[in-house]
Image 1 (cartoon, one colour):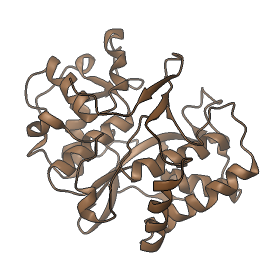
Image 2 (tube, one colour):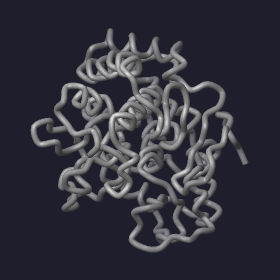
Image 3 (cartoon, helix red, strand yellow):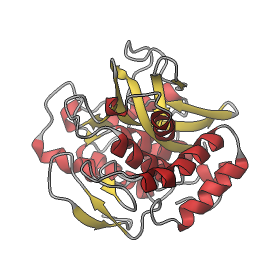
Length: 305
């Protein structure tokens, strides 16, 4: 977790984004979005969206959690600079959270304030908003969001380097807070916001609720796995009642105000995150699995080789 609210805090690595002994690999990498994103995709391959079949032997890469662990894994397979090409099947298996964490760690290592943002992308499948994590970096005197998984100029998103959400069309990247409040106003169909159209049980109001908690944690430096659970996060079968919604509404509203430059809202949310056990993880989390493995309790401590 970050310990204070200023740009310098976001230029300091957290336990999750700290490259540890691998810091030298990140020094000197591009800090402009397109170049850095290309390196992230060279090191990490999406475990579900690869263009080739990935080996079962490396599927547990996705639980690496710490950037140092990901880089250790990469260097065992490819003891060479991160910019040198890796065969896709031999890259570190991960997801949007991991591509983002790589970029955030690299930016922070090179002195650029950065953080990860959790929300939904409306540009992968028409009519569906996939849960997604993107980079937010302080570039050119302002916060800019970019999608590290998409190559610059891709037809899927011609301009992935300065993301925003168009409420009128539902296009672009919506933060979890934006999606939750749009649902509360009746402006969106929450059942179209989730993991995948073929997994309708991982979508809907409960999913939006949980994603806002993830968004707060990531904003304040607890860049947890997307299948981690803590606090008020529940599973797809967990009921969502009015008490839950009333508890979350001011959290989401504070996020939106903070994004708009309201420093008081940012401080209010930060202080709430420090004390509210529904928002902030404790010493352990319950780690689920996209492969259907039974949930397990894991300690949130820095695991070093």
